[in-house]
Image (cartoon, rainbow, N blue to C red; front, top):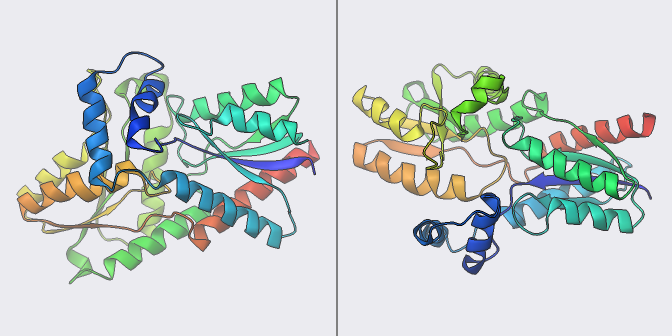
Amino acid sequence: MSDAVLLMAYGTPATLDDVPAYFSHIRGGRPVRVEAIEELQERYRRIGGTSPLRDVTQAQAAGLAGLLRARGRDVPVAVGMKHAPPFISDVVAELGRTGIRRIAALALAPHYSKESIASYFSAAADASAAHGISLRTRESWHDHPLLVAAIASRVQAALAAASDPAVVETVFTAHSLPRRILSWGDPYPDQLLQTSALVASSAALGQWRFAFQSASRTGEPWLGPDLLDVLRELAEDGRREILLCPVGFVADHLEVLFDIDVEAQELAHSLGLRLWRTASLNNGADFLAALATLATDLLDEEAAS
């Protein structure tokens, strides 16, 4: 067997003791203030001590492998992380040692940005070249019909909890990035709006808007509007029921479980808003079907090249 699928994710510290090394890796080895480390550790404590991202991603990989096997493609599905073990380069190297010569790689983030996702592919490409492996990737899949359908189904399920779906304001969210990405025509903001519009149409939403979340305090401008500011605006406009759909994320992790479920929820409560969110895609069968289609297409492309 010479083919494999590589799923690439951001990464998360395994324990609170791993937070300093994780934070340092994100910052490219630059020193991190003790106060910043302690603040991040406290965020993890408030969601139970660790993020479920590692386990969820492994479950996605296992589910994808099973689905591919059922479709007649018995290939290993590996997981590589950008900022925490197992690192992408190490995973590719290990695949090479086991005889893998072709890899179909997907970043578990549907929306492409040179500022973020490009580095996933760069790490995979460098390691693949070093070990004689042919690599096939797809930069973005933000408008894939199966992805849109999976998110839309969760929006519809969440709206079923509303007293009157017609009065609910749905807010799609994604991780913010530095505003400087606009200067090089980065597709990230437009792709997010495209996904949101497709989901809104599929779910027959009457009203919706988009907001960025989780901007880092780096001293430079980040993309907006910020979710917390949008919640304040909605409260001022007299809105009372707000459904959040973290359309930029495919798994439960810190930016969902803390930034939305704790920070945004606490603000919403203080503003008199009822706030809830859609369920994450995680390893849902419909999302795995989307990944399986994407992976199969890449494997077929690689075999034909």
